[in-house]
Amino acid sequence: MQKEIIIKVSPKEASSTESIKQIVASQLDIQISEIKAVRIVKRSIDARQRKVFVNLTLNIYIEESEPETKFEEIEYKNISEAPQAIVVGCGPAGLFAALRLIELGIRPIVVERGKNVRDRKKDTAQVSKNNVVNPESNYCFGEGGAGAYSDGKLYTRSKKRGNVDKILRIFCQYGASTDILIDAHPHIGTDKLPGIIERMRMQIEESGGEVHFETRMDKLIIKNNSVEGIETNTGKIFVGKVILATGHSARDVYSMLHEQKIKLEAKGFAIGVRVEHSSHLIDQIQYHNPEGRGEYLPAAEYNFVVQSAGRGVYSFCMCPGGVIVPIASNEKQVVVNGMSASNRGSKWSNSGIVVEIHPEDLPDYAKYEELCMMKFQEDIEELTWVKGGKTQTAPAQRLVDFVKNKKSDDLPNSSYSAGIVSSALHEWLPEFIRTRLQDAFLQIGKRYKGFLTNDAIIIAIESRTSSPVRITRDRESLEHFEIRGLYPCGEGAGYAGGIVSAAMDGERCAEALVERCSMVSSCL
Image (tube, helix red, strand yellow):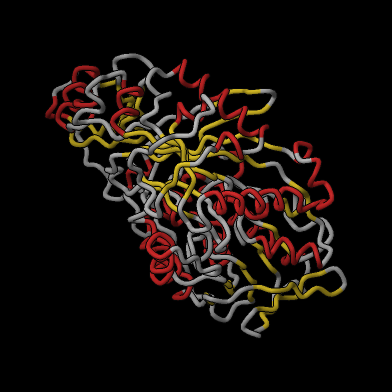
C-alpha cells in the first residue's frame, strides 16, 4: 500500500530517514517495520517563525517496495533524414527548443555565436584574470547561454505556460541531482550545469541534429514576409524556419532586426546594484539564530520586494553562499551578476537589488524609439566601466555609506574576482535609481535587523536582469506578428525570465513551429 502524507519536522529530523520513519509510523499508528520505503516528493524550509521547520510531502510504501525509477526518461529518436528548422542560440530556450523539435520529428540546426561550454570557460576566466572580454565568448554568449553561469536556479512562477516538471526531469536525465524534483527552490549549481548542458547538446547531435559553434547569425533571409533562412558570419547560409533564442544581451541582433524593419517594442526592465554580505550574517537574519544555519540547514536565501516612489524595488538572482562575477559582453562595459556552486559553500551571499524602469522614465532616450531602453542600458554600463577605471574592476561602496551619501574610505574583502574600487555611487547613479535604492535599503533594514550594515557592500552595475527589447509575436501562434516562420523565443525576445521559463518557452515555440508547418505543406 502507498500513502501520501505531509509532515513538519525539525531540520535535524529531516536529515535522517530513520527519524522520518519514526514520525510517520507514529502519525499513521503503524510499526516502523511495516514501512518499507519513504520517498520525499516535495521539500521546503519554513523560516517564518523563530523556530525553523522543514515541510515534507512524502510517499510512504507500506508492506511494498519502492519503485526503482523516480521519473520516466524521454527517448529521442534519430531524425537525421527529417525536415529541418533553425534554432539561433544555444541557451536554455534554444537547447530545449531543439530537443522538443527532435521529439516532434524535426531536425534542429542550432547556430551559436559563442564557443562550446568547455572552451567558453577559458574565456570567462580571462575576464577576471586579465580584464579581457571576448565579445563572442563570455558569461553571456556561448553554449548554455547566460544561464550556464547564473547559478543554475530553477525556481519559476511561470507554471501556467508550460510543464515545469518535464523541464526538471530532462535536467535530471542529463545528470542533475533528483533533489531538484522535490525542492521548493531547486538549484543545480554552476559547477554542475556545464556538464549537463554538454550532454544535452550531445543528445541533439546523436539524434541527427547539428550544432554550429562560433557561428553568428548576421541576417535573416526574408521573402514575401516569410523567413526562409539565415546568413552567418562564416559565409554559410542555413535554410529553414527560425526559432530566435539569442538571449537578452545580443544587442547586435536587436539592431539588425531594427534595420530589417522587423517590429520591436521597447520593454521595461530593472537596474541597480549587487549587494554582498557575509553568508553567516544572512543565515543569522533569515534563520533567527545568532549561530547561523547550524549543521542541518543550507545557506539562507532571501526575497525582498518593496515599493518606492511608484516603482518596485526587489532582490534579483539571490545567490546564497555564492560569488559575484563580471558578465560584460564587450570591453567597454562593467556588468555584475551572481552565481553559486552546488554546495553553496562560499563565505559570501549576494543578490541584485534592482529598480524597475519603463520607457517613460527616460524621456532623453525617446529618440532611439524601440531601442531606447537598450541604449540607456548600454550607456550606464559604459559609465560604470569609466568609474571603475576602464577595466573590469567594479565601482563599489559600503552599504550604509551609500544610503548616507558618503564615499567609502575603504572597502571590505569581496568575492568579485576582477577587483573593486571605492566609488561614490550616490553621485553618479541616475537620481531616479539612486533615491529608490536608498529608500529600499532603509525599508529592508527596518524589516530585517542587521541587513543594513557597513560591513556589506554594493557593487555596480546590475543591468542584465531581462531584455530591454521585446520582439513581438502573436499570442496564439507564437509567430512574429508580421514575419511568418519567425518564432521569437525566451529571454532575448522578452517572453521569459530565467532558466526554466526560457526552457518552457523554447518547447512552446518548437511546438508552434511544428503545428504551423503541419497546416502549411511548404513550411519546411
